[in-house]
Length: 371
Image (cartoon, rainbow, N blue to C red):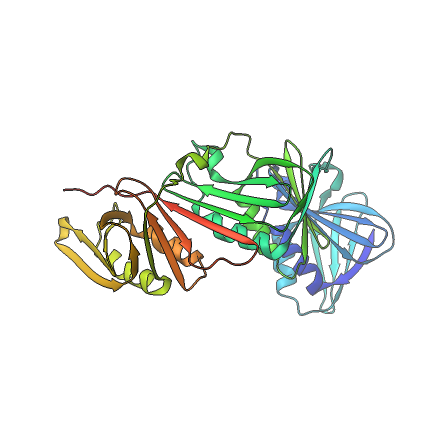
């Protein structure tokens, strides 16, 4: 089997797929790309058995066939070559691969493509379409809030709630929660499933320059198709917590403040906070917000005062500064609102002005005030 392809085009495709390949795979063949040639199209596949990526590129081939190619050495070779046509010759008996460039020849040992694990196919799936921009936004704005706690597998992924014309993405680690709603989707079903973090990180980086994404799903897998690329991932088989139950509905105290000023102040004050709790105290009353922190172990303390608009009774509440800074970094509006009820109930962080067609709500649990 022999085929020719542009080195830079091939590298671009391989870099999309290579994100799946783990550092210590359970099977040696998982360190390879599967190359499958059919009708002058090269399909590239990579998998870690949980997440798989396949992508296609036009080539000039003498016949159809498949071979597993060691990923690391191939990527390093292509990165070191200037853009040019290169030719792959594969020995059909021992799967030896010879790459020819304008500079010379490179030989590497391939493996039988038939030994490569099968990539799941979309069977009995439901499907929806969504703009790639909206999906990228949704992932970027929620992923940071997902848990790292492997003992609570449901919370290590993002909860996708499909509801006919809208898609809700939720992430939480029990200290903070983000709910992102996007309204312009087309779906004939109402359902929900949990997508693992690794797959979404890979998806986010692969989605640039794409218009629409087709998302198909069944009980075991989710399939994201865009352009000539498809990402498949195994869903997390667990029950997601009832997140609506923790979102407080009656929040009579509302603070409005410049997002950038609030975030900068928190970053400075956090330097003086206790490194275990990252606790900062917000003291809010009419027209003024005082942010303070102290670390008694080192006799460090800091206080700043910011102007704000505030409706409600004076409140003193403690939060983890790191969480607030992270959340404010994800929001894009110039002003943000914080809705509060009492010092022991969660605070709700919202953008003052929503982008059309989408809504975002962030919840942060208080850090109890120590007397």
